[in-house]
Length: 424
Image (cartoon, rainbow, N blue to C red):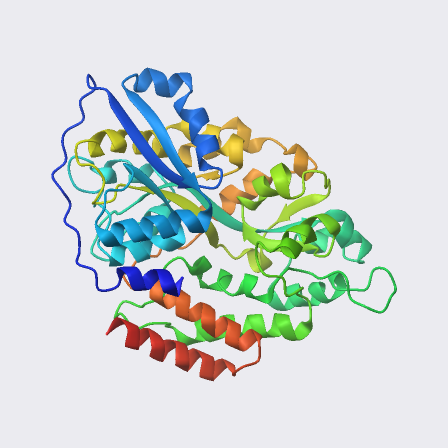
């Protein structure tokens, strides 16, 4: 991520071009740049009767790539001032990066007036798209309330009750349980089952999921110090307890661990449930969902739609109509949720009967009630232009502590020093 930031830092801010008004009698072809499964889900939306009735004059085309490829492409294009797709999707962690480069239209301004619909969306997600200057630079369409996914049979075989897993009191209790979940299952003298994939999985959860909060009201980074040092202490304790498998995210062994029982659980956003049941481990029947330790509320992921300043101004108002439909239409939100388990940002749909249903893949468990509870408890944090720098530097501090290359105080002090040097 550090290499990506270099492309934007120091670039001149791009001005928001004059936007032509939306004309419902004009034919538009709107392009959407996305990643992962978004095209699959949004294609169902734009081919639905509801969308076609609302926008018979709008045709949608997609440009899709993998997660890193999409964000790298967009970073390069915006830095060069080249024309983007009409709509570009961003994972929440990238919003601050593009705010810093001045590359996103302010959706609170006319003709968008995005603040008219933001009260319909879960507050923390809107906050993550709002700068300290009050600019609304992106519109949340799905969120990722963080939960603990666990294998019921693996947990039971390890001598841990499901009641205990579902009522983890705090992080000390989690580590205690994690020691039981970490064991030699085949008697060959080697550990082959761990509690979680990697100690760093817990590093951002106590920090609001790493979504904002990197700077205090006086623009001081990593404050209060106790919270950030506490995060480092947590990952150090998890690694020292030996309960993580030291698996890099999205590596082959990481993916396999969710199928072969090498890990008992994973602390991650709700979207992971869709990945489990569709392609990571569709044949595994004992995955379940629980709250994080102490019912801490955090977000790990989330999709936002943006109108870059270098998108076509003649189509921007029409593109905004599409964004509003994707973000604020109950029909659209539920379609996307059914297709790829991207949890809705629209509060209204939390009362839909589908949210009360048991999920077959999770043994009939009402997982969506847990997601909704977490989503509405996540703290609100605004975005600053320097969040991406802070997050990247903090990630390095976490690695230094986990790998025993320095102690907690030194890692914290170094991170703070590097952040201050980077923003001066």
